[in-house]
Image (cartoon, one colour):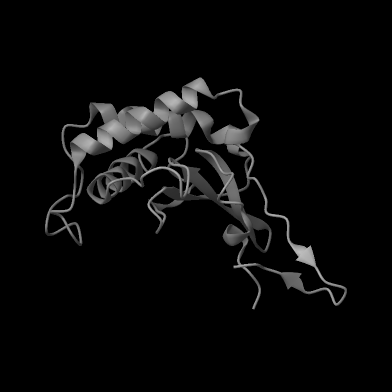
Length: 174
């Protein structure tokens, strides 16, 4: 079975940032999945579950209301490992082109007085929100992005090196 693309990223070397995870071609159209990584995997504590849920609601709402980007947004949602989010957009852009959009979305969280859609009618687990911690993580990530604006590492995935045998098979250690 072929290893999926996101598992070929060296999670021991990735830093928080904005990365292209994959580009899918649908005929003449492209759909791009971006990795918006808030935490260093396996090194930092993950984002609190309630805060992650609140960030999902807040930033999805922000992105889908952004006048320039709303028609491009397909999906915004958390990674299972709770170290970041996936953003899926129509088209294909370099991660640097998303810098202002992502920074603006995380900065906007500081202005939130409530979490949109956090009711029993609108949400599958409406009691699992933490706006205060969402604001903390959003401010932390926004400050990090600003401090690293010119750092190429926040826009380029570190790839794993895989040994290829003479038979063309990939070797994966455990």
